Image (cartoon, rainbow over all chains, first blue to last red; front, side):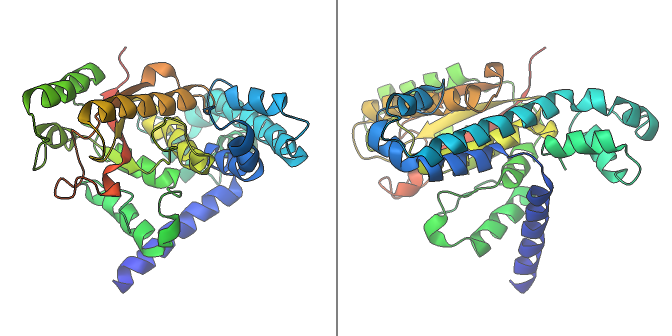
Length: 139
Length: 200
């Protein structure tokens, strides 16, 4: 049991270190922030609306006179951060292309093999590639 | 405390243990990390081309039509699904509704984070909704399909997952997690299954 808890703490530590490094918000963090800042107003004004297709946001805007300003502020923060993360996930392989050719020769793509190679080579990988992987939430 | 992650695979069980050992039970339904989800969904990479959303819907409907009483032990449907890499997530919905509670937005986001990770990038997933045995089987089948649809809509719009990678299935109460206690809340759950590579 003690060994299990120790292993568990190590795993949790790894996970926390991972999230602390990211310069962009994860989808989970985005969901958490929206629930915290906008949840009460969603329950009050949008109780028959579901997340998806911008329906909740439209409802909040419709009721903006009564919705807390912090909610809209945080929606803006979330949108900007997620846009940056999505762009990083889209561009990561292009940005890291030279690093992959230099440090990951012969690595078969798929199942995160390239990412694992770049992570292992993190000391020598270019700053641009490191930054895009960080923004993508992948390191 | 309900078990949040349930899988037959050792790698994923490590993550499940970590969660059970550390999480306060009151928060058991809200927090599951994308790391745990990735482990659960990537543990098996063997494709199961036989399982499709349409087949599962068909099996659930047949289960209702052919047995006047709900299955008592583990259903054939549940047994078949157990072969797939999977994770179980607790998503809170409003009573008798497909509206997702804001408290579960974080859990949805964790699923999205996992699906966007390179290790799962090439795969497709089924999002399967299950109810407990309260209410009629036909109603439960319909409600669980609506709930699974709601999750897929959120994931494919707000959370940016390609629609071709996800399909929603509602199984009602036809694949109970705890058949011995059909009304146990543990039966109300969403499961995500890795069903193999994206088709070319």
